Length: 126
Image (cartoon, rainbow, N blue to C red; front, side):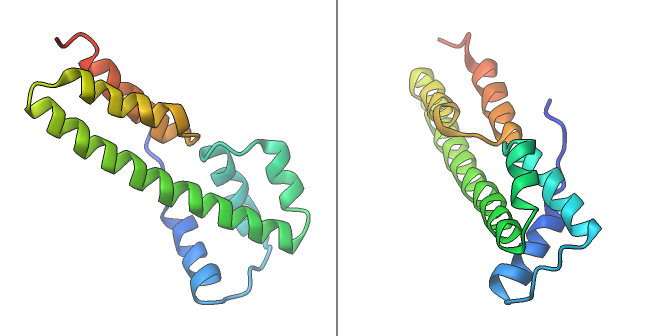
């Protein structure tokens, strides 16, 4: 099973800053949140540290983290839906391919682990 992640705080920050136009204040708390989330979404420590050196960089980091979470969620949920449709029809080859397709492009470790787990669960099916 994959380790649970709590992206509520980063989603709330992204909503306030990217949608509502609030200024991104680089407090210690916000820097820690951005740095932790970077690791969780597959952004290297070096990239995160570099981005956090400026307000503009931190804003770009927040945008990229938000994008990876949003797009990864959508990609995985859509693929899982299609995978279960294929499984229900007995088409395990297509079901496995749905997870292969996610694994080919996904960079967020949490989503990769879920896709790999689903793939492994049906690997021995006909």
